[in-house]
Amino acid sequence: MIPARLNPGDEIRVIAPSRSLSVIWPAMYEAAVEYWKERGHHVTLGRRSRELEDFMSPSIDAKVADIHEAFADPKVKLVISCIGGFNCNSILPRLDYDLIARNPKLLCGYSDVTALLNAVHAKTGLVTYHGPHFSTFGLDRDRDYTWRAFNDCLMQSAPVQLMPSDVAGAYTVLQPGVCEGAVVGGNLCTLNLLQGTPYMPDLRGKVLFLEDDNIMGDYFCFEFARNLASLLQCEGAQEVAGIVFGRFEESCGMTADVMRRIIRDAVPTDIPVVFGADFGHVFPMVTFPIGGRVRVEAGDHAEITLLAH
Image (cartoon, rainbow, N blue to C red):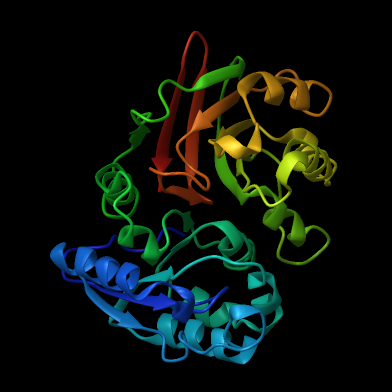
C-alpha cells in the first residue's frame, strides 16, 4: 500500500516518537521550519511533541496520541519525526494499526524511528520511508541533495535511480549479482529490537538496507558484526535477495574491506551486496521506501533503482 504523493502546499505534521522536539536547538528548529515553508509546505506540530519526561522524551501516551491524531487528521499528508533517540520501540504495542491502515499517509524518519517504520509496514502493509527527520533540514549540510532525493521518493511515482553523492562517490560492489524485491531495514541495532515481536517484517525475498551509528567507540565494528549475524539468523533471513549497506561516520572505522570480512561468513555468497550508499547517520542522505520495491544490479559498478515507492 503506497500512500498518496506529497504535493506543494500540503500539511506536514512533526511528531516526537523518540526524543522530544524540545531537545532540538532553537536555531536549528527555526531553520528547518523556514526551509520547509520556502518549499511551500504548511508545518504543524504534534500537540505533545515538546513534552519532556524520562530519557529526554514525551511519555509513551503522549507519543501515541500524537501519532493517532496525525493519521486521523485528513489535512495531514506527511507525518515526520523531529529527531531520533533510543526508545521508539516502546510505543509499538500501544498503536492502533487499524487506524493507521484506514488513513494511509507518508511516514518518514530514520535512526531510532526505524522501529516505527518497520512495525507499521509489518502490521499494515503501508510503505513507510527511511529518510530525513524534520530537523535534518535545519542543518546546511548538502541539503539540496537530501531534498532532491526526498522529493524523488515521496513526491514522484516514476522509478528513481539512486545516484551517489559527491561525498560518497561510486558505490562499492562487495558481491556481484542482480536482485529485485521489497525493502526492509534502516538502523541495524534498532531493527534487531523487533526480533521475536509481532512488529518484525518477514525477511524472505527482501532486500536489506542497513546502516548504524557509532555509540560503541572503538568497538563499533565488533558490535555491527554481531548485530548483522543476529539479523541473518532470523527465520527467513537466509532467503534475503540482496543487501545494501549505507555510509558510516569516519569514527566507525567501517571501510569496504572491513565489511567484506564481516559478511564473509554471515551472508549467502549468491546475492548482491553493495556498500556505501547515501543513507545512515551521515549527510547527505537518500530516502528509501520500506516495503517499496527496489532493483540492485551489482557488476563492474552498482546501480540501485527504486521501482515502486
